[in-house]
Length: 383
Ligand code: PMP
Image 1 (spheres, helix red, strand yellow):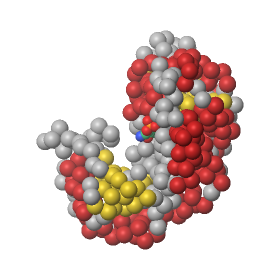
Image 2: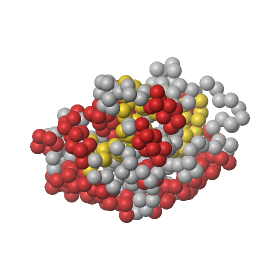
Image 3: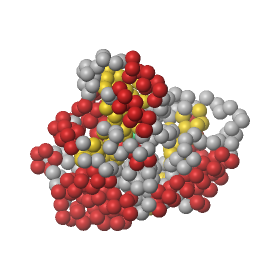
Image 4: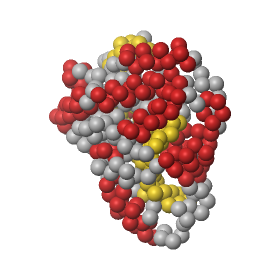
């Protein structure tokens, strides 16, 4: 791993305040987090958690189905369902737990899952755990997906299409309107991982289903609380039957200790802020447009929407990517240096993410540092 530039280690990030943090002892502006709305260090959310900690204690003490269910869990599920305009929602300890739990609870032997080639690792693991036949379709290619569904007609009992709404490593959006239509034509269920859309996409921040106008037309919507909402955990939103089924059958729900009620209190506060402060989404999009326009000017246009909040800068080999990341940190900017296995070999990249907490000056500062650090686009990057 070391020789291939793939050995990883942890760095220490402390004193986070908005987009600023101290990284291994050095002050840096963070362009690598998923704290898209700048809520992770919001004192109002911390205060809500602190109040609940004093009242409910640190631990839920048992699984939800045993004796760990607290009214704050129920309240958060009701609010999440309302937010997603779905009949019901069910909490999971993390997005990883939700995807690896919900997919195997919905399909199994004799069924098929259709999975986008760039789906998140947790979706891939959920598909594998399910033991359903696995069909991988080319990234974002609804036409290819439909051809597979047609070719498989009559072969399987149930069919589930699984996709990220916003691909975490390249920021691309999956066209959910086309997805809902294709699924309807072929009698397949749809499962969308809205980890990077929840709180961000749509005027109300209700996520990809709002952005694409398909509320109520995606069977299973998974969202996370640890990204735009600034807390931790995840949920599945959908029909009441779906949520009750998952409550009984999704093993990471059934066999795990309930998350601390204080975390639910924090998430409730975060949800309220995400709904009531739409300026955060505006500022996030303005920052994204500024960074993307600056990259265009550097001759390194980033793929994706003009206001997409995840901005990939392809750097080629893993070592070049890690080096660029290190040089940026020396200049006071923390960015994601993403390499295999997170992305396919040869597509290592800097993953720049924006936040409502960034100032225009910080975005300009990052652009100036990128101009120094990136090899010029005309010189082929060493592999
Ligand atoms: N899905 C996607 C698309 C993600 O990016 C992530 C987090 N990296 C997850 C699921 C997992 O969510 P969590 O961090 O809550 O486990």
